[in-house]
Length: 354
Image 1 (cartoon, rainbow, N blue to C red):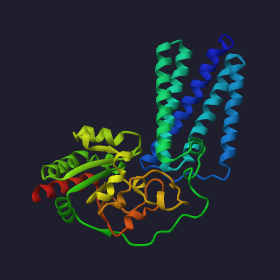
Image 2 (image 1 turned 90 degrees about the vertical axis):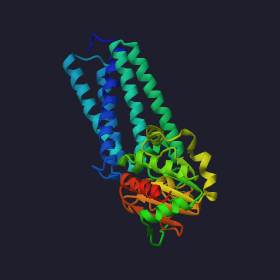
Image 3 (image 1 turned 60 degrees about the vertical axis):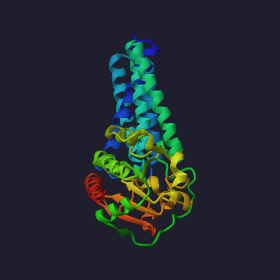
Image 4 (image 1 turned 180 degrees about the vertical axis):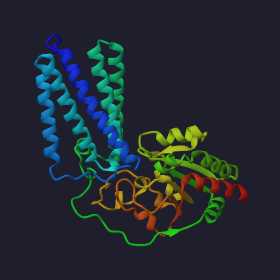
């Protein structure tokens, strides 16, 4: 270690700790999104103290590495930094709720780029340094987009913050009522009798891989003279653009896919809104409840349409863990089941009525 200059020592250290944080953080994020871990944040009473302790230990090990010690001491310090930074990545990500995982993913993506950039310095490979910097910058840009779309503060998210920047300090509203359910036949009849339809897809559609039967249903409706459009929230799915890519993959015409800002004022004049696997992005509590965890977050105002059909596996809350009062409104019916299977049934039902 004593034979390496400070630039290479710093590169080795940074590549190690950033890579370790990225690895353990990514494993936790995967576990939360895949349902293998609870999406609720790990609220340890000494959370901040643990983070500071692990951070201080990592920095202390870095100081030893930068001192250019003997090989044995340097490797021990580097190994210590690897362990403490890995524990820090695991603990910080576990302390963040499932609703903020989209932001965490983009942050970790940025981290992976900076780790690659440091490795480029370490190995004297300018191409690797450049590619790593591009990945790091693009991940940082995506993080900014995600935070703006969710009205989140990036430091609050990374440090395991709770709620949006607009959340009040009081208790969230309790919504009373009972959700009404519908069936495929009634939904097909409703769609064929309507003139304008907006489809709002979410992560549930991506998980079920239901974009292909959905495209078939859209073709049937358009051939029947219906005005059909898609409304895409900036954080629909688990990263920006995920739903746009899925719809493009299925061959949905790009000109009927619109963003939140373009379509949000059109729900008032829409006959039917079909919400497929979306929850937090269509939650009216973001506008109606100042104490909600998602208060101030821009949402799709689907509840303003004449009729709303919400397709979900169950009546459970979304990743944010916030009740959705839209499910209880008089103009909302729930169509429960797997998104792909239901879309196949809807496509067949609409064809039969066309």
